[in-house]
Image (tube, rainbow, N blue to C red; front, side, top):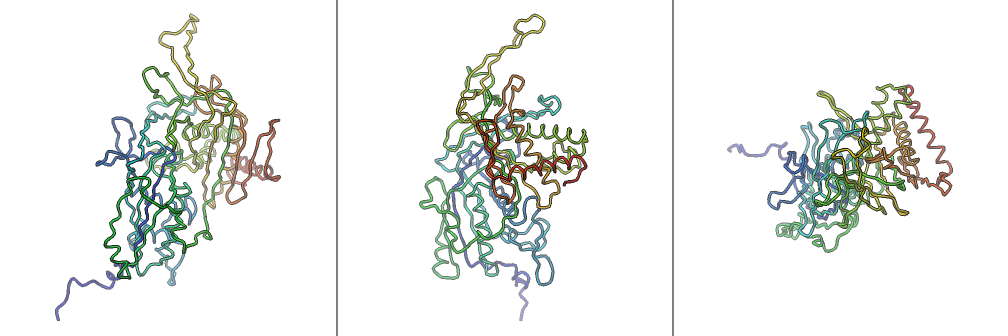
Length: 515
């Protein structure tokens, strides 16, 4: 008998996948906010430019970006925010860590896992649909110095972003092996894709400042049972064409309808967060400068505009502008409460808004606070001509005439801000963070905190109208301003419950410990 040197070892045979079922999932993803998918290079048009398909010359979403965002979302569902996904809390009979917990079972082994397996889920690049409008917008941005409230030196940059309303064709293939838990894989995939249906998954950069929001309205799922002759032949004859048009899916369904044998509703959601959706009236005018007027006759400075999902031009306040003034005011509040103790201030503010400066050797922190872009509705743009006056002559300064086009309030003007503060389940500063967020809401509400430029001439101030607040798993409640400028709470004990967070903020900044 001769030895077969090519024969598989028992370990190799164990690692081979015996695929018994293939499931093809397709859907249409629509961006609901500007999206920044950087290619990592500095372009001729902008410092940050989108990744482009070399064949079509249009933006696309790489499969790695999609898979990474989906894996992170499932990890947060299973473990909570900022808890990581490298180890599993479930144990095998021998007491060793089970390396195939739900996210690794669906998306493959994590970094450093020598026994990790290949992901059974294949995620394809998402290409722009042929009938979708790929509008690219130029956004300029600048870091504001917290002390001078002016632009920091060498801190201006611009971005080329994909406007809302772009549609991409999504495609996944789930390969179910003989030795895997069929229901576990389907449940994990179902929960993940439901995140896209709910708009809870963001793609690209600057997602904490409102970019990358998207949604999938429906799916098309095709399954193949490879244990049967008919299923195997159907798979071999199946050539899934890419989705090139938004109507390519004839009968889109919710993913729960496609996997009707799975019931994920009874599974835990371990995320902990504070959600605030606040509506304000505009007190006067507001101007967030875009820096890019249309046409040679356009004003020197105009209010920032973007496209919505319907292709309409709308006025917006970017999440970065809102978060910037919130961070500055939070620093000021913290310094007042702790007698300018910089360590306590930096600890609290950085835990909410992320690291301000990252020096070599430091590990930066991402912002725990998500601030979405805020649409301005019912406003009226008006061009104003301004001139700088020479303080000595009392006349117009030379070459100091310029035009601005802020938006002005009307009886129906509103702006809605949406904030989400994510937290660890055991974060000792959680109550203090909520207290700071409520203090910032109060400052916006009472018109003592403005957003945008021209604050020295009365622009950017708001008047609180209503706010919907949800703290972790507690019942949501609403605050409404009455005609007599009093606050009305939808729950009688809501005001008393909010006071404990203010007390926790004072205690945290007073002695560095949460109460």
